[in-house]
Image (cartoon, rainbow, N blue to C red; front, side, top):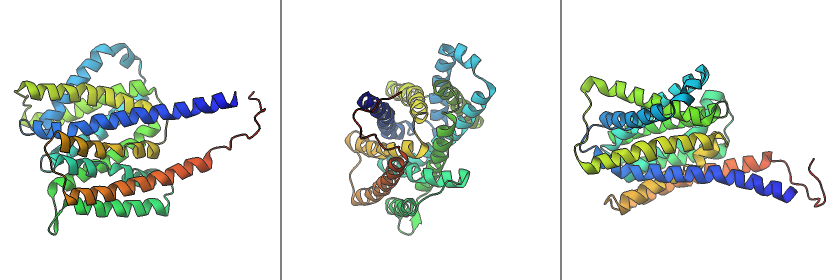
Length: 309
């Protein structure tokens, strides 16, 4: 019985991790697709249309569930939507003047920024090892984004989006444990759509004109939008915010992989060096939080004949 319980716990821990890895793979695949779409429409137009499509489908298919949601779930979902929508806007605008592979790595810094957000927002203690990882990640970003003695505007904008992603991860991790994750994820999508559309309206909303652009947009609305956000919310309800952020270290890896293989980008020394430093920082925080989890887990019983009541 003890072995069965241990196996069930291991499985229950593996499933959320696997779900988040799949989510990061989907997100990583969008960087070079977005890069192409931004040649046709503006960043705000893209985000507005993308999430409006997703929100309309969610609203029609899930109306009874949304109607039953309480005020707290709606409030939390809308706040999360605004945070995520803001991060998406900064990331997408920055991507217009930044290589998809570099944007993927800078965006992935939310993994290191998440414990910083926990410290500032909830005064959770951060170890020296994590601060060391933050410093290494900062140097890595400088290697990626410095052009002479100036930091590129696109890289700075993308970094702002990364900060917002970190704040979003922290709050999502807390609120997903208080509410129904599925409903919270649905409301979050509506919040993103409303926020991005309000931001896009002053200049008018332009639609894509080619079949390929619409296909990419629909993929990002349903797969990278509805499915990915609901899956992320479900997974974060079953793990801590730092652990979730650590699993998402795979996003910049997938982003660079897709950008090089399908986006026609070239692997450069700067990309390898700066990206390697950021990944080193990310894995440093992973080791730190893994050791914390191990230290807080109750020891397993060594008595094979022990019974579970």
